[in-house]
Length: 242
Image (tube, rainbow, N blue to C red; front, side, top):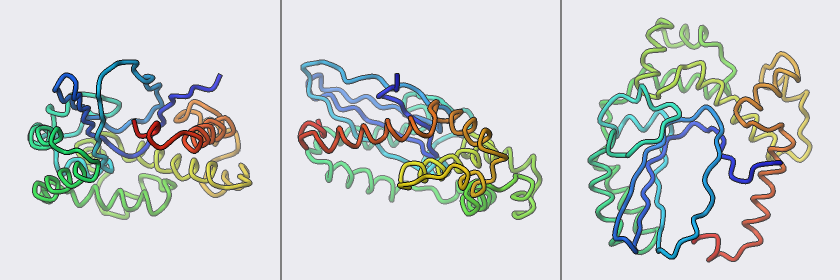
């Protein structure tokens, strides 16, 4: 049976606010970078007015707003105040007064532009990330190290501090994301072409790597994604947004 509420890894981190108008309460959480799929909970059957607003960061940009190292955020979900206490306080208290999504976006953008900390950006991390993305995750870490002129140990350390995962793991996630995009959007996805394009040893290697992140075969993954698209297209706009 294909799970409907499957959440697959990406290269992002999220701060999520849940606004409960009925209880006059705002909860917040921070989700670090994931390298494994998981099942999300279903919709709650409750007679309460609840809305959700989230801020999504590329994994390498969240550190510009955090108050501590991101070394231990892989596959974690915690209160946003543990790493983003000021952001949680300043944005959260204003969400009750924001009626529309546009208003909430404006609140978040104003805060982020005013409080970004460029000094926390690590040049070595950004050069390493650039090399990984530019090569669609197909770069050996030894090559990336030579490209940006640092040691493997130093690169490992700065990636863990700023992103929460190793360079090798980030490269794997980037390659998986490029592969998944091809599976989803190409009308006639050819697995042998993908083996060559993304540097896998053979078809079995590609399938094993994809299933490690997605838990499903490429065919079943695409089927599940298209089921969600059909569901959203068939629903009324109000039902989708609520």
